[in-house]
Length: 159
Image (cartoon, rainbow, N blue to C red; front, side, top):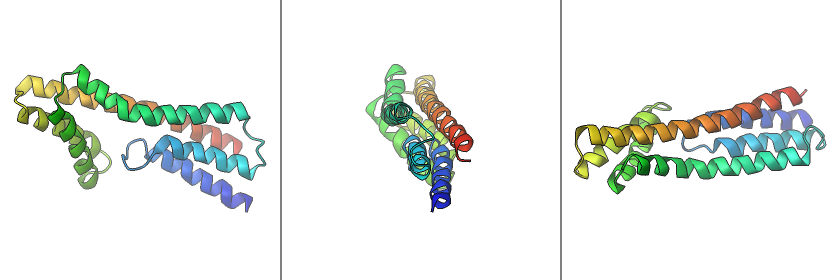
C-alpha cells in the first residue's frame, strides 16, 4: 500500500508541473498534495510540520496570484474590460485547439481583439496583449518554480 501511495503522489507531482501551463489543472495544490501523500506513506517523517505549512501557504498564494497577476498586468498596460474578457476567452479557446501553447497565443490574441473592439488600434492594442502575455508568463514562471521544487524534493525523499 505504501508503494501505491508513493506512486500516486509522484503522479500528482508530475500533473502539478503540467498544471502550470494547463489552465484547467491547479498545479501548485496538486504538487502540495504529493507531499501529503509521501508524508502519509512514510508515517509523516520526510517533512517537518513547518515545511508542510509553509509549502501549503505558498501553494495558496500562488493560486491567488494566478488570478490576480493577469489583472494587474492588464491594468498596468491599460486594458479595457473587453480586452480582459476576450483574453480569458482566447485562453480557453487556445487551450482547446492548441494545448498547451494555445493558452498563451489565445490570451494574447484575445486581448488584442478585445482592445480593438473597445476602440484601440494598432500599437495600443498590441501593448495590452503584450502586458497580459507577460503577466501570464510571470505567473507561470512562479508556479513552475514551486512545482519543480516540490518535484525535486519529492524525488529525493521518496526512497
